[in-house]
Length: 342
Ligand code: UD1
Image (tube, rainbow, N blue to C red; front, top):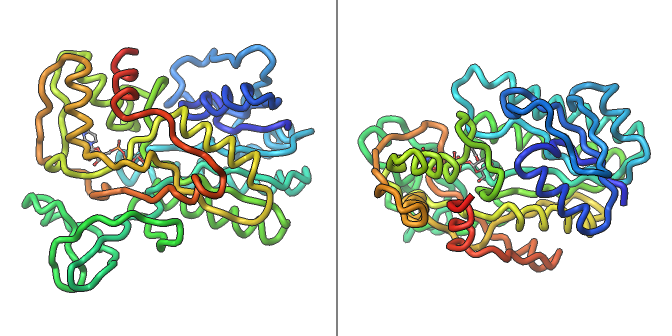
């Protein structure tokens, strides 16, 4: 297949590019090499891969990049939690206006298959299990509770502590920050486009992706990269809240394989797929694993919090395993050891 990969110079994008090439596909990249992400402006793709340097919001760049293409994988986006509300317009513009421009371009070019990089953050706090009220959706956590060290979101009806449940793709969408909102909007624009054009969408709801090439030392870096950088400086990883927040850390090569598999196999309709390793870990557990692998100082649990953070993000990725026959291969311990060794 001839594939257009947007955001192909990014962390996940480069792994997806390699996976496409390894499976014999022809790849063209569209990437703006935005300076806040790409310090090296002279980044070049490997031999045989064409790079269109341009922004997904630029109609001319889109038309140029789409010519002769059969499928699109849309990864170009502004990621992370953001620094403050001043980031809102950039999330809306980069992620949502950019996606709208891409979809309009695909309709003009007659390209009907899209794989979208979405995120687990679309579920907000997800689903919890109350001993009395069953499956419930926790409300956003209040600043006064977080400041008092009450990190677990309570049952919205009785206030009891909740057990965590795995979130399926059918759970209601409930974005809690600018990035999450922009990902939900992307999914909705894509569904609208698919209905009108008859196109297909696979929305890949990635968990916390880690591995070689992770962005470091930027306000948008993921926690695994932040901890690794701190340990390399000889400093202790600083674990927010009480360290008990759960995430599913999924290796970037597994994510790339899932993305390309969906691009190859999903050919009709709109379908969301959770992409996780299936084994949730706490952030504290990850900090200890990295500290041990790098032989660095023990983590410090700070009690700090970020208001837009959700407590637990743990999803059920069985749909992807059953329908697309994808299976994660990289174990947490070996993936963390690899990250530490880079
Ligand atoms: C991450 C991704 C997001 C993706 C989502 C999918 C990044 C920056 N964000 O969001 O793009 O859509 O996963 O699930 O990669 N923490 C610390 N110490 C720190 C920094 C963070 O303890 O120095 C904690 C945070 O409070 C949070 C957890 O680590 O509980 C994860 O934070 P982060 O890596 O920013 O990721 P998410 O917000 O989960």
